[in-house]
Image 1: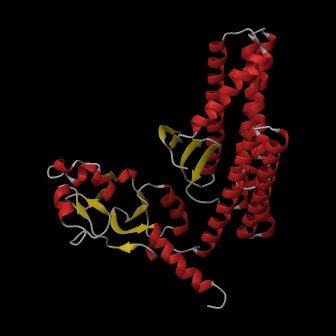
Image 2: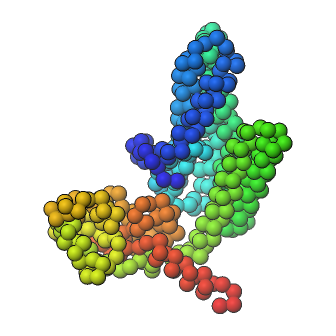
Image 3: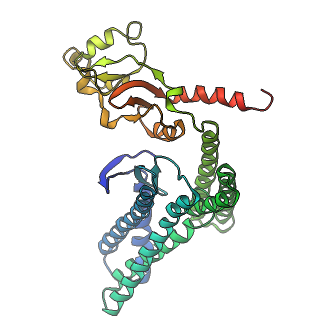
Length: 379
């Protein structure tokens, strides 16, 4: 899930919003402002309902962010780097740089999410009781009580033993510890995730068709997400099994053609695609030979034709800080999810400060095809 609106960094972790988060804000605010709040406490003005509903929706997003941050913090404490966190329509996603190394680490990383949501729900419940004891506005108490309930529901739902939910991670950790086979554990958690997903899809559509309850569409959507994501996780695990222990140096293109940062875009374009520059992306180097970024055709296209004769490659390149980098001895399996989530779909391979190669998803796909053929029975 790629972010649409970056929010900066929290505890050193990049946080962003996907555009679909507007759906959950609109859904929560509309449900509260038009339904729950007026039904529970009639007589207030429409703007009072809407302002409080929007505040509740924003706080709910904050609780989702706290849930994912808890995963991220515990992951880092267990030696798993975190690339970023993105909030979207169905919650949040903390993208881990790699997988947990042990069942115990997997269990700790997974368990902290539901525990955080449960703690937030408990805190909100206590706050609602305190406000009620102080005879605060019933509408405010209702909003805080709703936040308590929704976070407890979130904790319980996420604890269900089905991938990709946190409970699915807990199930995988238990199966992994019991069998000693991470792949077998992943298949078990994925099967549970698909079973739960199909159950939600069937019951959701049944609620719509038989009872006319349109909220069943929401359950069916979540079910579809569970089926798709559980299947994707299983395939990712199979990919890791095939690419296990394969270093980046085995699949990268060595000594790639580079572009000087001081070259103008017009000169750069004049030599491609039939001259020196035959690809669609190139590392950019400073005068001393150190790599400083990456230039791609889409980046060049953003510059007007009339300005390309005076605009340098260095002025439009993707800076090195925003480019995915890897070491030649790093595992390929840890690089794949980072490449899939990037816009450039490429990584520069650095040995210290020295550029030694470039790797794309196509390079990894070719290696995967050969390895799959080599390990397939009968070959």
